[in-house]
Image (cartoon, rainbow, N blue to C red; front, side):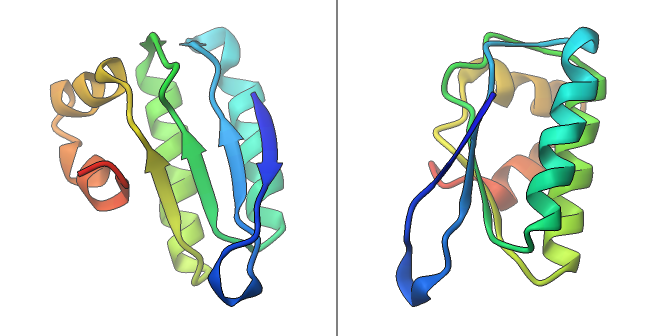
Length: 106
């Protein structure tokens, strides 16, 4: 997972996190760490999920927690181009409302 920055309207630079293709239990700690660091910067967070090929429930929980924490801090949180696998995982667990709320590719 890599973090990038780009300037957006209003001068705020969102943190862009590109997710790895495989997000399983082995990746949960790293995912949590990346989101924690991003949340500490108190900027909008944009997640590039296009390459996600496998995702497990713990990683989805981490993403949802990060999204809710970002919103609670008054910052935006978004998924750019959710992969089909990510979309299916949210739908299978009945969490599609979060995907719809944070998706830039509606």
